Length: 297
Length: 273
Image 1 (cartoon, each protein chain N blue to C red):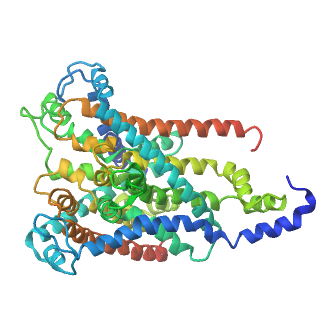
Image 2 (image 1 turned 45 degrees about the vertical axis):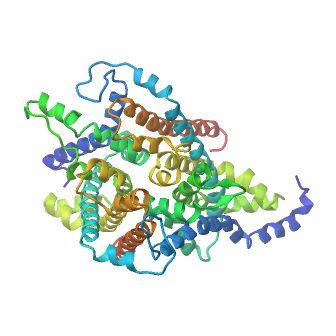
Image 3 (image 1 turned 90 degrees about the horizontal axis):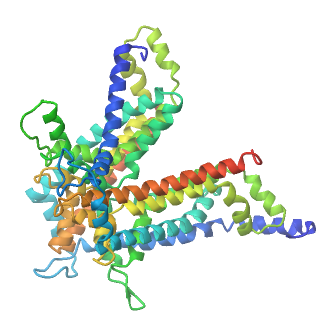
């Protein structure tokens, strides 16, 4: 402990420490540059290399890989399928997250804590555990088939593993928590009396929903939608393990080129295109947030 | 609007379905993990813990579980060492803050498969002091930190922002060095946020398997990677046991943190508040 007489010098020492605040962030910046910036730059460089038969890559400056990714019908169909499944998943996830968030928003007391705990659940579970769980639910020897048969709804085994439905169910599980909290945080900023007022003025529930609640929650919905879209664009394990074999997505193609074909330049080129698509979507979120700023709160 | 009876009923039915949807994958896993059967099928024909026995006697699974735990601990430690000073600086500084914050959060929005191959290509060939970086636990932890760090920062910045700035000034006036003021004054007050951030980092690493898939070898394979690789080859309840163990360790970590929150609040209440 320093004696009280030291107050003045110490104080100047303390305020002298404030300009050095940028130094506190230096280690983190160095880490991000080394572990994130450099590998990404290397990835971009790799995408211009050539892939020799039997090898991994030889240094070159060629646009051949991008030409393949952006013009070959197979690749275009892979890009199309990735965007398609991500859009479907994002829509389903946002709708589910919205109605549950709305339910929690209207709910008071102790139940609310329990519901929040449930909503956080999918965030805590590994994607691979989610896959394993659904893989015991959807196939013909799974729980769904057994339940339907014991209920007498069908007399034949049902197999939904390997369908787009299974893929979307698994995929939306991964981003639903994030969407839920994005939407709930916006709903929490809305005055519930507005809904009562709308009803008192004679609006039907549907009208109140579409003309009062939805416009007010627009920003949160847009953020949640883009989040779900961006997350789903990068997933291949769930799509691959639950969806049909024909649902061949960009991330799956990347790992195939990287691990099976050992074609690093091609894997890199697909990855760069994938990031570009995600960046465009992320800029969309930014644009919508600005609009949200104008219309909400 | 919300007094409408049919609407309320529909909404409640939907909420029930949603809860079922969230709980179902874990509930099935838990039930099948205790199945006595040789294959996964329904109805369950009897319960026993024999697949747990098989799991805990399998050296490869146990090795994978240990790797996961080590990598998750390294990730949590690295994220905290980097996130604590950075978040503190960002919470107190104004200049260039939006740009820096965006830069630090950015990796969270890059898919795991892209981060995985980038790190494998860009850093995988490096050899430090005769020690290959590729396949090492450190490299996997570095890759996981790319996701854990933004999460930790997102939790820590608001924590530091809500702190009373005069606390730090008072500590400075009383003669504490900035470092000492941070450890003795700021840390205890911000402990809830700090523990949450560390927990987030730990769980993120424990659950992640796409980056790890590209960065591990057979020896350093993590539990989720091994689960993914044995997904199609294994039809026995053992895979449910492994998945159950993974989810169980996450919930144990959350439970421990929650117990700590409750204890520390109870301890603090009579005096401080």
